[in-house]
Length: 223
Image (cartoon, rainbow, N blue to C red):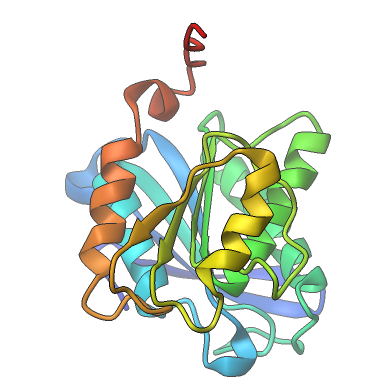
């Protein structure tokens, strides 16, 4: 799905060329940050044009971010074969390097849907371990119980459907309970958020605080 400002590109991945799209903020505005979007499982029809991935892209464009999506290995024009999340995380890391070189100095947000949340949680851990943590994570339909999700920062925006029968809500709660990270539950939503996509955009925009978007630390609440 292309916007008027979409730019298709190719980068060298670990198993060949990786296809991607860059979408710029509306009206030629200067980007306030970079957002990387990861799509659902490639062996079950997941692509960077998945409707939830596109919703995340459009949400971040509305927040003034430049957004990059890639097709994982073996999808679309991307070369290679599915690597069970390992190579996909590597390739997302290469996308991170590509985008931070192209737009130096901007904070980077990571977002994903389903399988893409596993990839982004692993990339977030790598970045944090390297001393360059992501600005914030947005994980929709987090793949808890399906994949070995990494621990996530306390300010991660987690959105899940009440009626998700692919990744049950209970599995997500079991995963985040020890981390004490809240979950936004969309009543009546299934895994793919059929007729509920607007809630994703609304919640992310509402929770994307000015201090997070500017990269400034938040004041901790008194207890």
